[in-house]
Amino acid sequence: MLAFTVYFHISTSEHRSFSNERTSNRAVLFTESIPGWFYLIFVVFFLFRGIIWASSSGNNVGYHPIDMLIYDAQSQYDAYLRDAAAGTTLDQAVENYRKRYSRYPPPGFDHWYRYATERDTVIIDSYDSIHRDLVPFWSLSPEEVRYRTKQLLQNPWHNATGISVRDGKAATSTRVVDDHWSTMSSLVDMISAFSEWLPDMDLAFNINNEGRIAVPWETQARKPQKAEAAGEVSAPRPQFSTNRAAQWEPLPNYNTEEQKMQDLGWQSIFHSHGSAHCPPGSPAREQRNWDRGSLCSSCAAPHSMGLFPANWTELSDVCHQPDLAELHGFYNSPSAFRTSYELLPLFSQSKAPGFDDIL
Image (tube, rainbow, N blue to C red; front, side, top):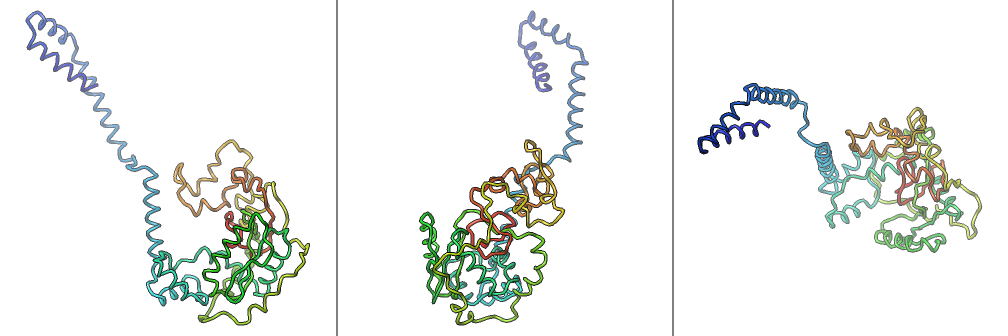
């Protein structure tokens, strides 16, 4: 508006200079009819606007929250790569493993290191995911792990298929349902690429898509020290124990009817299993989100920056998000969900946070 006023004043003056005398007199009469306070109002208005802008500019954010989230994510990613690829020699990789996990790497780690470095693998020193999955099983004896594996495989109702490794060769050890034959065949082929370095063992694989092992917090809380202590290794082991095949009892030719799981398909399972790993008193254990039509802001606050997810670790923690009971199809009504509160050594291709399947 100020620019328009100045332009109008100048153009009127120019028009007065170059017009004939009669037109000029009319312009003069018109401009002279504009009172001086009219210009004063514009000056005061823009001075006021300038003061407001100057006083508030210190509170303005000079970047969008997404820009900050991208910057933080990139910084964390760069730090992870530096940390995960710190070992440039086998000795360094072994030492980094020992410092991270309070134990030496398993026998055959040198073969893995050579395989990884020959293919320019970026991640050499980070095994956090498999470490978290296996720690609970260190509270069990090897005999108990073998026994629970056998229990899973000898009843087809459990929807678990076995793969055995004997003398460095992998093969399916139980009958595979036709719908899952291609998946298990591909898995055997993948394991066969490095099975010569593996000890004799049996593995139980979940043929369903969902994770199924949900050990309650109360059970887990009694075993962390025992599990960590059992996992510590004071000296490296050059090879696996001998005669391992004899330690694995062969699966019977007949199927047993003993069920180690319960069938909760098409039922809401968040409060019974999805939040079972959460500590007592946590929102997921104590609260019910009855208002399904409104956003649970307190559920999103711990992992958000305004309207945007900011912390993936917190976002993956369901213990402060009771609203997920009605927002996720797996928690609301899983199509196939045969599950157990017992710690069973079951390998799965996916799982929800807090479940104890081995990925």
